[in-house]
Image 1 (cartoon, rainbow over the protein chains, first blue to last red):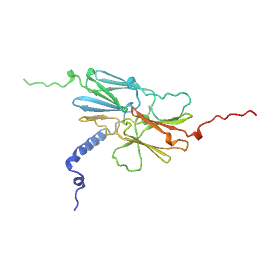
Image 2: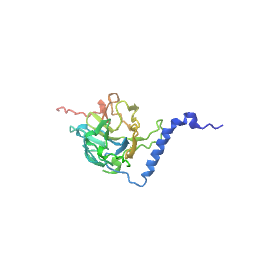
Image 3: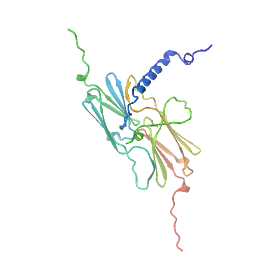
Image 4: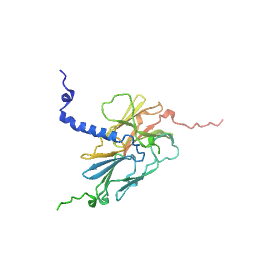
Length: 145
Length: 130
């Protein structure tokens, strides 16, 4: 009489990754309860992929030439200036909500970064930095004699 | 900077949407000179293919679709911002020349040029010698 709708729409196995994703999102959401949301600019997301870290940040309208990314040890520093509008003199602001000026932010990663192999890409206003781990810093296997 | 300045603002619209993602209000700058109004909107993650500008009567709607932003095979360890679409609606006055609106997107920033109609442009009035 009642056919479960989950089965009707698509196979259960197809819905599984989505459910796992939902579970992860929920865990993340509740693990941050009580913590104050950080207010630093730019806001970053940090991903983990095969032992290396990927940092993404939303930085709309930045001149990639003027964006400064530096790594020393386990500290990643991002700094730059938001591109300002070139006014010729006769313009007037009616509304200003976008951020102006320069920013600088340092992040401490849980491992030393191999600075030689850091890759950064800036596309559509999103900065993505891949930070591989230093070889010496990788966990070592210890053999039992 | 204050928190509201740094974090993205979520769109709290009453309408139901087809895409099941969060929507955010893009931050905009609006300025004018004697010929046109300019609208600059921060929409990181959007390019010329995924941005949609609609003008219906005097309502200008800007939408940006952003793909989910997940990195394949990577797990999110720490998150300060969320990814979602952008949507914002503006009401235009009759002073805008609707036919001549120009839009461009660069580095996740949408730029709209809204030229003023001829009839409202400021004019110098010559004084005739009596």
